Image 1: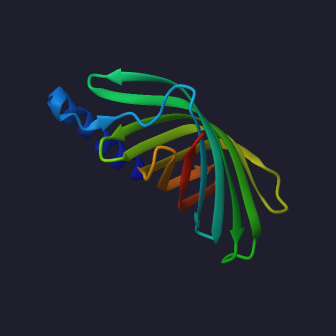
Image 2: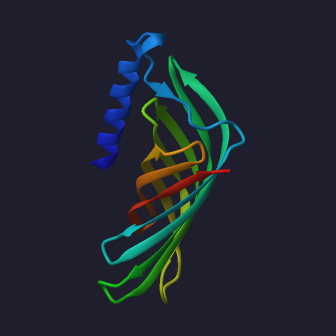
Amino acid sequence: MKKIVVGLVLALLLVGAMTVSAEDAVFASWNQKGHMNIYGSIGYNYWGFDVSPGIEFILGEFNIGPVPFDWGGMARGIVGFDLFSGYGFNWGAGALASLHMGLVWNLDFYAALGLGLAGWYGTPFRFGFASFNGLSYKLSDKFFVLLEGGYIVYTSIWGIGVQMKL
C-alpha cells in the first residue's frame, strides 16, 4: 500500500510539473554526478530497535521535462535488536539502485531498489529483495536530516537519521 501511495504522489508531482513554467519551477537537484552520500538512521521494527548505515555514489543525472532526477548505487545495512520478541538480533545488507527527486523547498525524495542478504541470530541467511525510501530535508549544503523506511529481505526499519554529502 505504501508503495502505491508513493507512486501516486510521484506521478502527480510529475504531471503537475509539466504545467509549471520555468520561472515557477518547484524541482531542484541536490546531488551532482560523483557525489558520495553517507546515511545513518535509527528506528524501530516490529520486534525491537534498528540501526541502519549506508553509502551511496551518485552516477548521473537526467531530466523528464522540467523534473531533474539523480541516480546512483547504494549499499545499505540493517542491524536489529529484537528486544520485544527475545530472538536476539537480526541483520541485513543490500546493494541497491537509487533515484532522487528534489524540490526547491530543500526537500529530496529518494527511492532505492535492489537485492540483499538477511539473517537472524542462529539461523542461516536468506537472499531476496531490498528497498529504502525516504524524504530528506536540507539543513546545509552537506547535511540533511531524513525520515525513511526500508527493508532487506525480512529485516526492516522505520527511522530518522542524517545524510551527509562528501
